[in-house]
Length: 75
Image 1 (cartoon, rainbow, N blue to C red):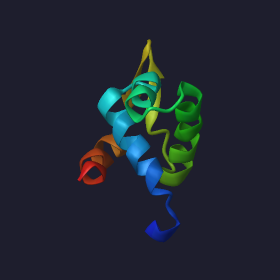
Image 2: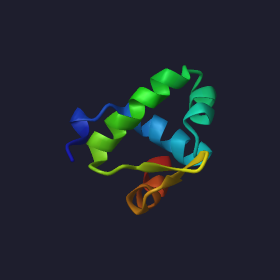
Image 3: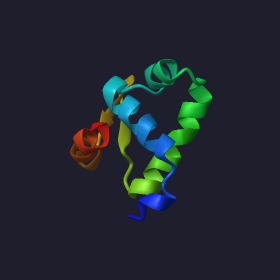
Image 4: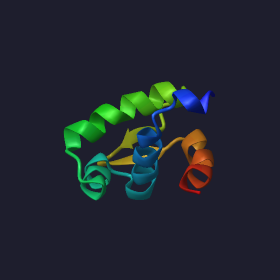
């Protein structure tokens, strides 16, 4: 992955999604609208080539790749 081409705001959004496990909660913590955060999820999916978060019941569950990326992104 060429990090020079990565929108670093996506990594901030990813970190919040991992922390909150909720699009609405992540949006609230980032002070953005829920629809803006929802639009970010497909961008993250394209970036990583992975679903990242999968809807399960009323919440989101991280994929194994997302779990593996969580700590390095947070750091």
